[in-house]
Structures are given as C-alpha cells and as structure tokens.
Length: 426
Image 1 (cartoon, rainbow, N blue to C red):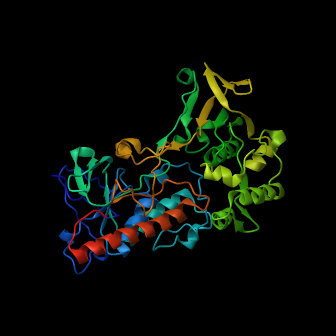
Image 2: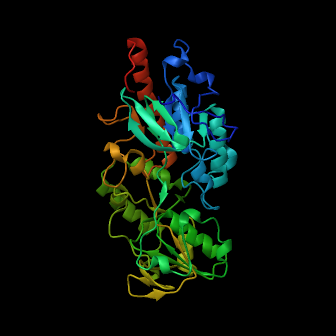
C-alpha cells in the first residue's frame, strides 16, 4: 500500500527524506482542524517547493487544511538559487508578495535573486510549512479508490486524495537541435547554467534568444568584460521600460488584462514610440504583431534593464537567428557566418510535465495543463496545477491569486466531506 505522506522536515532542516517507508512529522498547529482527528483528513500533497507550491501550502493552512510540500532539491526555492547572479524580479516588491507575508521593504523595489531565495526561506518558516526535501515525484497515477498515487524516488509510493502540481514554468531547459551543434568546438551552454560574465571576459560571445533572459545576459556580458557580444534575434521582441516616471510596467499589465487585445496593441504601439527609441538601424526592428496579441500567444515583452542603451552604444549587436553550426562557424539566417568563442542559448524551457502526468491526457499540445488553479478536469478530480502560465501581470502575483483560489476550492470540498462523512476526491 502507498504511504500516506512523505517525511516532512521543518523549513530549517534541509536533510532529504530517504526512507522508502516514511511518516509525516513537524505538523503546523494551524494545519489541524480542531474538530476532526488528524488521521481522518489526509494531507494535500503539493509537488514543488518553489513560490507556487509554498504559496498554495500556506493558503491551505490558512483554511485549516494540512499540506505537505514535496521538493526534489535539498531546500526550497531551488530554481531561484540556480538563476544568474544579476537577476532581479521584474515585478515590484509590493505586488510580488505571497499570501500571508509581504516581501521585506529592506529588499528594495526590484528584489534581487538572493533576496528572493531568502524571502522563500522566511516564508516557509513563517507559515511553519511541512516541506519534505529530497523527494522527487516522477509519476502521478490514479488510485483504485479514486485518489492518486505519487511515485517518488527511492521506490516510494505516496497516497493522496488531493494533489497540487507546482513544479514550475521554467522546468526543463530547451536547447534547439541545430544542425552541426554537437561538433561545435567552442563553449555551448544553456542560459540556465550561466551565472555571471567572469568566465567570458575577453571572449567573443553569441547569445541566442531575445526574451528577458537573453537580453539581460547580453547586457551582463557587455558590462562584464566580454570582448564582443552579439544577440541572435529570430523574432523582434516588444521592449518596454521597466518603469516610466515611477509607474511599473507590471501595473499596466494588471490594468490591461481584461481589455480587448486590439485596443491594448494600439496603446502599446503608441507607448513604445514615445518611450523606446527606434532600434531598426541597429538590428531590432519594430515587431510586426501587437504586444498583447504576442502575450496571448505566450511571448512576454522584454523589460529593459540596459538592453536599449547597450544596443545604441554598440556593446550588444543584434544579428540574425542561428541556422546551423559548421565546425567553429555559426551560420545565421541572413547568410552571415560568425566564429564566436562561446554560444549561450537563452532558448527557453519546457514545462517537463509529460513524464509526470502526460499519460493522464491532461496536457495541451504545448505540454501545458488544460486547466489550472481551482479548476480540475472531470477526468482528474482533486488534481490541480499552478504556475504554468506566463502572465503579463507578474508570475508571483498570479501564483498568489491561484493559491487562494485553489485553497478555497479544496477547503470547501473537505468541509463538505466532514459534514457529510464522505471521503471522495477534492
């Protein structure tokens, strides 16, 4: 029989749960409904100890629902720990706090990577969250009783009636299979392993991809001593100022979410002409599709953290998209050929859900859940997803809203079961 729960360590402890048969400990007093024996209500299992998983666990606790967070790394916030050094939240501190704990004012308006990690650690401790580290859930299957079985490392099988999948939007690095890629003699790495510019001082570097990550890494390299920095552009990005006269781009994103896309596209076009210089002569033309239309297709605009000035100064030079590798030569879509010392592929991530739940027919053609937040599919009651959209209004903000909605939905199901004496899915 599957175990009822994974071993849960306190936020202060990072020791992984390694036993194949484990029990739950370190339960927050707020997570225990006073009128019901703890054994009568199985915990909700939350897969992933990033901001989405922690927010959902805290919101569930506020409703008196016990949650156990299963995290494959040895600490919460693992993905944030692995990001490049200069990264900051592109959303404001005030609009990025998770449920029940604001981000400290001392962290500033644009919170640095290390402070995000510190905040997530503080968050888990503040809410007394049960976090089982070293537990990697590899597959979710339906159980014969209508619940779920989570297959984890070490041969563990964890029984759950309700599961929240929160393994993160940027889960699996994607590196295009460019022809000749494997024979390239220079350094080729995904942006997920880039930390800072020091190893590239004095080198000729090509950054591939003009999302926020690629744009910021290119600037970091230019400021960090790379001899030459080129930025390969397949689709011209929308570029917005992170803030204008103190007004953050995120606030605009929140305001326009419910407006007709065409109206937002027109307004964004006017705003760009007023706030961003024409970079066409420098290799970054105006996009041929509207900003919000592009967002709805999954492409978030680039928030300027130095790219505009770097392109104008010539310290970052946009070039055409990469087509192939030929030995040490990189061939571009416009016919040019260059010979960089290193190529950094800021080519995005995949959700990584196929091996976890792909067999349950819950994913769309892009590998994303067909429903998220409080909604569940009729074929998968009690199985929720959070954090698999890329909203213009800010990821942390949307994770907070999702967490509260998910918690209310699950708590209502649990309350109905307590009153009716049932034990169905939630």
